[in-house]
Structure formats: C-alpha cells, structure tokens
Image (tube, rainbow, N blue to C red):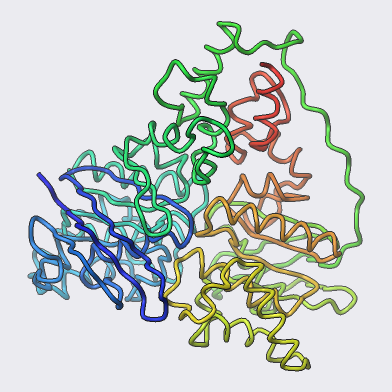
Length: 556
C-alpha cells in the first residue's frame, strides 16, 4: 500500500530565485525504511518538511504531497499531528516542557486524549525506550542523546504511521547515534512504522534501510537499494563519470576500487561485509601481502611541540549545589598553532569545558588561563544561538560589530568569508531558511570573520555534508599554519583522525588519555575509524580513508 506519494513537487523560498525542490516525484510504500541523502542544501530538509503539515515551509509551491491518497494540506489537524511524526535535528528545538514525564504526555494532552489513555501510553513509551530511570528528571539535566530519545518517545506516544527524522543523530556521539538509529530500526521492523530519514552518518543507516534516495540541487538522482546506490554513483570508475556524492558514501563502500568488485552488483556497506571481501581478495590472490605477517604503516613524524596558549588546571564545576561534578579536577594544555580534538560520550563535560574557557560558566575551583592576552571566540553546538539578523550577509557583518574597521573593509571581509564558507549565493537568505549544514557554515563565518587567535568549536561538523567537511578541514589546517589555535569538541571520529594534531578522550570529568591522532585512534577499539577497524588485521596504523585506499592499491 502506498503511504506517501510526492508528485512533481517544486518549491522555492521567498528570499531565493533558485528552486529548492525541482520536479520531485517519489512513492513510499507502507512499512518501508527510506534514507534520504545528499549534500547540504540539496533539498533534503525542505522535502521532509513538506511531508508534515505543521512543518511545511512558506514559499512558492507546485505539485502535490499525499498521505494515504489525501493531500497533506487537507488533512485534519489531529490526523496530521498524530499519524505523521517528525523528529528534528536539534533536540532542544522540539522540547517544550520542563520535565521528562510531562514531555511524554504533552502531545497527547494537546490532542485531547483522556487521562487513562495518556497514562497508559506514557508508561508504555517510558518502558519501551528505557526512560524509567530518568522519568522524573528535569529536561535540562539530560544529555543530547537522552533528549533526542525523549523526542522520539514523545512522538511515538501518538502512535504515528509515518515517522520522519531530519538528521536526528547529528549531535550524538558515535555510540549514542548507533543506539538511537537501532531504536528507529526496531520501530520499523517490530511496529511496521514507515520511516523516512535524512542522515549524514550513512555507515550506520545504510545497512538498516530498504531504499536510499540521493538528492542533488533539488532533484532525485538515485533511487535504489543502498547496496546498489554507490555502484550507480561510481559510474565507470573514472574521475569524469564519478558523481561527487559517491565520496559521501559509507567509508567501507569507498575503500574498494570498482574493478575489485566487478563480480558483484553492489559494494560492501558494513565492516563485516568489508572484512569478508578482504578475505576473499587475499584468498584468490587479487590482493597480496608482500611481507609475511601484519604490515605496519610508516610512523608519522613527531610534530614539534608549540607553547601552551590555554591552560586548564584542576578545574571543578557542577551545575547545581547538590549535583554531581561535571568537571572533576580537569587538567589540560592546548598548544599554539594546533588543532586539538576533544572526544567522549554525550554528557561527559566536553561542552562545559569550552564554556569554562569562554567564561560563560565559572568553575567552583581551579584556574583557566589564556596566555598573551589571546582573543578566543566560540561557535556553539546550536548555530541558531548566534543568529540575530534577517540575512546571512548581515549576520557576518554583525560578527565584526566590536571591531574598529572601515565599512568598506567589513564588507570586503564579509564577501570573502561568505565565499570561503561556500554560501555567497545565500547572502540575502534568512538564516532560518537555511539547511542545518548551511546554518553551521554561517555560524562559522560569523565567528571566524573577527579573526580570533583561538577558535573554540563545539561539534563544528554537525550537519555538514562530506564535501564541505573536507573544505572545513583544509580551512582549519590553514589557520593552524597561521599560528591560530583551534580547540574542537567533536563526535566526528573520521574528521578528527584526518585533520587533528592531538586528540584527547574526556571521561568522568577529566582527560583519560591524550596523544597524536595516529597513536590515539590506533590504540582504541571503539573510538576509532572504520578504516582502522577494517585493516588492522593486516596493517597497523591506518586511521584515514586515504591511508586505507593507498595501502589497498599498493597490494594490487
């Protein structure tokens, strides 16, 4: 049975002459699990918002969107609210009450359900999603992963037939993201809920999905089983025929040249499938180790140490008098001209550390020292927290409001920064009309345009597509060469492995371990890259996709 039908849908925002959606048509059967992917700004979020009446964007629309044969715009408010659930990218944007139990009940109360129904459904959702232990907590006490799980449970309490999720795992650590997406998969398989999800973590979501839809510039360019999509995007394997979105596929799918899997009609998606293929390639002699035993990648040269510009000494901090310590004797030094990455689970205290450095919070004890009067600026986890103007251009200009510069120089810097962040075509757009990835780029532009000595970044790759991640990595590396210091909190393991100088693991309020990116990720079993997990049986020290592809090519 056809659950959702989109017929020749085109849409443009009032502030743009460009079509955000261009003649999009698709059909989603009941109980299907569909993943939507593509570059930031390709139209994913715009399409998803058209599938939910209350989220539908304002602008110029042509074509139709139907649910069970009925135009979504014609659905009753109650049916539109209960039958189609929607989970947003930022969990804080969706939470409306102060207590967990009230959040679970809020949607049902709004729709006028009886107390007995509300009580039964709340109890069921709390049990199903494992919320019992924090059922009576304040929402403000929850980690990012818990907030997103609460959003999902609150939506599912209304028993929707279709669940739409817009990059729901973008703010979660790798383990929390895996657990969250696994829960979504259970809803599909056990309850038959139709799932439509956009996500950049394709390595986690592709193996779960029935179908993958790839978008580019408002159009659908691929629509097939996930295992087949990369083959389609790879073309003939040469640079001219490869679609750029191929490089956004799950890491395992990108490691193997197309000619190595020509006997198959698809590429491996999971680590397990990748290992099986590696074993087959070695067994039939396609790949040959030139030396017996496990190879070892050449050691990286030890980078010269720089002088510490941020010193954290014995920091203690708690958010309430009777609460547990979030920072527990934290000691850390950040070197000048280095990109230092801080990793760890949701709620471990990473963002709190950034706030302590910026003096947003004041530790109960310990010292924060920034040497030589260096100026620090921070990009928060939620980019919308920085937005105060009605256009992207004005936002970037506002980032220099305290600097004594001529207006001509400010305008020039603004143009340069918009171009650097690849959003110059959005200069007149309202920041709230942008996709999550575009908002992230705008926030980066607004902070970086003031040219701070120290850049503090809280999940800067959140919502970014794989292509701009590479661009951002190169930008950050160039800043380090100019002796700028970057301290970044991130769950993006692959990004930290490729571009980070040093990595630290935050656990139990302090730094558990630190080291170069190479030694950090080579020594971990879980907090490490897909490439390291796949190749460590045959070669030690590989942590990036480029290293893995180079090594595989060397064995041919």
